[in-house]
Length: 379
Image 1 (tube, rainbow, N blue to C red):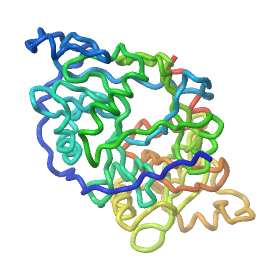
Image 2: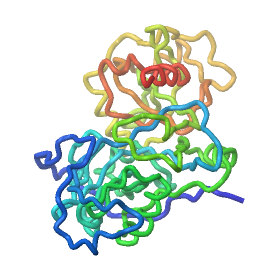
Image 3: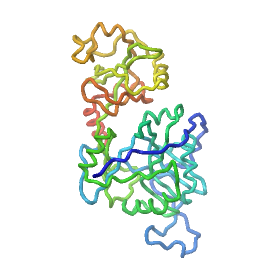
Image 4: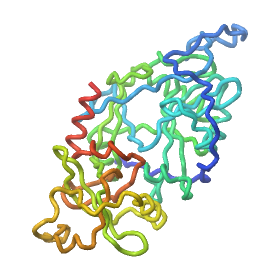
């Protein structure tokens, strides 16, 4: 019986305060630069990688195509959809460069990862995702955003290799690249670098297990696919299983030193609609941080068009005029994400507040509409 494995282990916290200027040694390329090889011919003979030698540099990551359903068959393999930051690790001229998908410096942001990548072979590029694990061992984007203030494991999960010791392997099938990753790269690396495992089960079993574990989704990749820089060709696809939902925070209820619960909604036809309020998912530290972000956003007017509600309902989730006396209203610019929502009045996994603000709040819609809009933009 196949089971999902909860991510174990921990690493030392990274220091987000150590900021340095980013000289960006890598202009964006979609192909590697070819360089004449000075090594003896005998050392270049190999049956698994091309013989031509290249200089390692940044290349745009291959992208995932959003999908409502994933393909099945022997030529498809599955991975967990991790909720983190995409990152390329590049080692060239003896130096490691950890770069974001937009070619920004990650070395100073995640120094423990950069240091652990030092044993990489020179002129090598690997692809992966920086992920923070919460107290239950689950990937958490909110934890990743706040890792500078809390002691949490930050892991670099590696799933592909673009270049190995000066050889461009992007044209090799994914199955070959994975073998190279397992046999030639990962044995050289230790914590916090880990292999992003394949989910060796039927698609139905994978989806059922991911749903039961409350994880975000599943990725499908074609085993014979080449690595296509910057492309969203459909050879790699992603599907959300537990349809989380972005919410706009339009207010909060008073309580304690900070707040009791946040009041959430989303936009429909250009108007903010109240959905639920929740107190789940906030540690004392996160409550204090979020409460500080409320400053300057206070307003006397309720931003939700469907409040007050006539009745509080069976479970007391309705916001009546009487209950609204304990509410404080905010301009609708703060955006949060819930990984699990029942589609009605219960936000199961609480709210993870992102750094999005301003005009982006007006783009937060109900999940199905948002997904349709996102897929429309990808076409």
